[in-house]
Image (cartoon, rainbow, N blue to C red; front, top):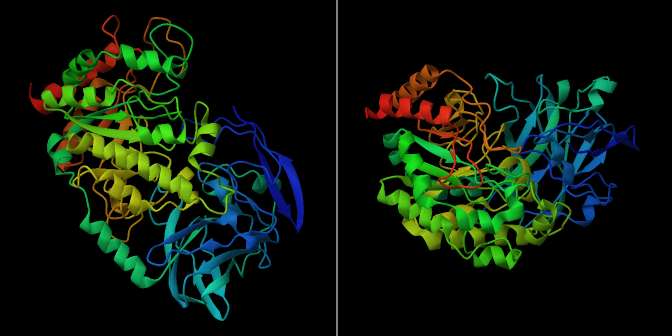
Length: 530
């Protein structure tokens, strides 16, 4: 449970409201408690955004979250998985956002936005004499994405140097209410919510798409393999016995990891690949990494557990993918993010991008073609996108040791973050469904990505002390899983399914829930025929 304060600007007056305590899922907000407007970690708000304009990249797309703009009128900060960097409450035509951007040269720029709205609204964008008025996109699909991207017609003319780009809803006549003030979801309880604007010249946008296509990864082996196993070696997970999380005995957990026993259990499931969490709920790396040590010593190990897992699985004809996130939540997240350079209030966040690129590149070069890629990089839209990462440099770092590596930049419940993502990467929890294939493809919400789905049988990882026994179990009947895996294999949609695993991977207790293993053995027989 985390308490957060949300700064609300009503009729030009700043009013601090204490928002009720709410429960966050594993991928929720950062740990930091609420602070003042000028001190709060995780927010872009400044007294004078004009003093630190956003530098637009010359040959690329630049993203700017709405909370980084200057606010005018009845606008307040959003809430939710992406709402922490959004604004809503456009109650009148006077409510306006002003983005200060520094253009490298005089040129025409195309514009796209990420937003959510229950109704079609007239939107206005202006920079100097350039004015674009257009209706907002009407959502025509069910469920996700719950925030969506719209390409704005027309161009904004920017002068070289600092420009002011303004946004408002010129026909808005929404009447505020107490309900409107507590934004709970991406749709912000019926309010228009702007998450970000994205600026780039038409030529730069087209060139970016072409470069992404040139280095696209190869996922045909996933389609041929049909399904794989997802395992969370999380810093916040628990062992078979004991009451402390793995982070408190991080080194020991890596030293005791029985790789052969782990691989034996993977083989029983019939998985064609394992997506292994290199980091989760705290940035602790189970192997050597000079790049991680350069950010913060003490979070790596001498034993190269990752290499041992890769080699053992490879001998059995099982591929390896990696999962990670940039350490935005979990154990000692604040100190890691500060060392990493992930400061939402900093004028220059290039250190964050450079550190992540260094970590990814070193990893790729170390393990080479033995690693099929980073199948799931979590929190990209919610936590990394607001820092305007150079996704292309991340992608090229991941492919440095394996040009065919696949990449999944997670979009969570929003649209794609980058054309450099190869896989549709959004987890479905216990849901047995496809990743909204209607929204995949060039120009669609998830972009030109290969279909894939991620879900779990029981849960992601043991969040509470286990006390020497497995509880819970499969969320659905065995036949439901068998039918689902067969249907997905026929459609050519690879599934990566998670089994909760104990933090202590040894052969003196079941590292996976026996009932879940029984389910996967039936899946293996039905799909593999053996």
